[in-house]
Amino acid sequence: MQLKYFFITILFAIFASSSIADEILSKKDTARTFNKSFNEWKIDAKRIDGSGYGESVQSDAISIAMIVFVNDSILKISPVYTEKNTTRPWKIAVAVEHNEAQTQRIKRLGDDGMRALAGKWYQEMQPEYSVMTEFDLLEDTLQINFSIFEAGTNLIIDKVAKETMGCWQGCIKR
Image 1 (cartoon, rainbow, N blue to C red):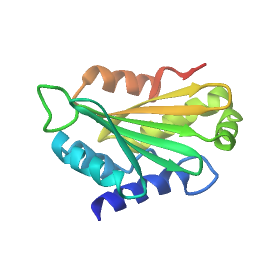
Image 2 (image 1 turned 180 degrees about the vertical axis):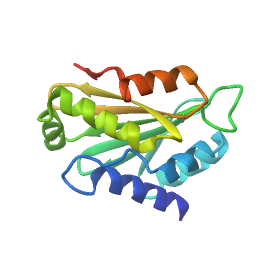
Image 3 (image 1 turned 30 degrees about the horizontal axis):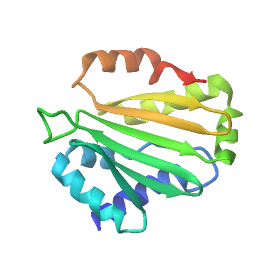
């Protein structure tokens, strides 16, 4: 049931309406993900395979992404572990590949609007988390990549995130 709640929360936050997402992950879901060992994440990933909500992909011994398909868009969540520490991730990578209609809505915001959106997400996750955002614009597809870090665990990331309001390397990649 916890897995179902987790994904319903995520899906609501990102795809509940045709407007632009209000949050990346809730702080509660982010905390829950940071508190999962790799083995716990692996069990959840296996559960999603048969749930009808999505699928999981294991790319190496300590990397599993959960992928959820909603409204012709794709949500990917990957806690990132190290070989030396599989008890908790050092960051959470979230990617949202938007459908064409949502891509066009976000593109209409322009560069300044997208940077403002990254700043909004950064502020919403403070003070517990530092979030770095990148908008990857391809022709008719937009993928927004988020890297979420626990505040205080990487002081350089905390500083860069604060100085750029969460914009990773200028935020917008074409």
